Amino acid sequence: MCADPEVMRHFPYVLTREESEAQVGRFVRHWDERGFGLWAVEEKASGAFIGFVGLQYNEEWSEGEHKTEVGWRLDRACWNRGLATEGTRASLGYGFEVLELERVISFTVPENAVSRRVMEKCGLVQRGETRWRGLDHVWYAIDRREWEAAEN
Ligand SMILES: CC(C)(COP(=O)(O)OP(=O)(O)OC[C@H]1O[C@@H](n2cnc3c(N)ncnc32)[C@H](O)[C@@H]1OP(=O)(O)O)[C@@H](O)C(=O)NCCC(=O)NCCS
Image (cartoon, rainbow, N blue to C red; front, side, top):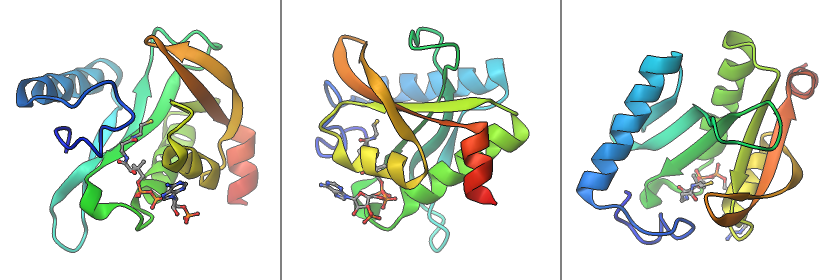
């Protein structure tokens, strides 16, 4: 998945197997350190691994005190079936109901129209623009009360 240039179009470069394994190592460490993180996504019908979605804490985030991000990456064969939206909603539910977060953020490069659409479908609202790891980004957020209002 991370070697597919189309999947990685909005990232600076595709990953080698070693880089991909190192990234999974960071995801696992995040679970060990914080007790939550990114989940592997399996297609229900086949059980195949098709990507990841979930929550990540970003220590270096500078736009306010709420630093937990919802993020995603899926195999190209599974796009446009609503799976990122389903996984994002589940992640937000976990963040607000289990972790009791007050706000969940998400961010991407401005050109990533699909991710922005997923954010909007899940009730995140654009709050600003920022620089993140050397690139311009737009950032979105949803607060607990907005999540609760949408759920009821
Ligand atoms: C972003 C990603 C996870 C979305 O997964 P997905 O399961 O296809 O998303 P969904 O099906 O839930 O929703 C996609 C939405 O974008 C819309 N969309 C698709 N192509 C689009 C485009 N070119 N421009 C605007 N919207 C687009 C779809 O129509 C759908 O919206 P709708 O339900 O209103 O019709 C997937 O495209 C991906 O892995 N991309 C590469 C990795 C990436 O960019 N990760 C995020 C980094 S911040």
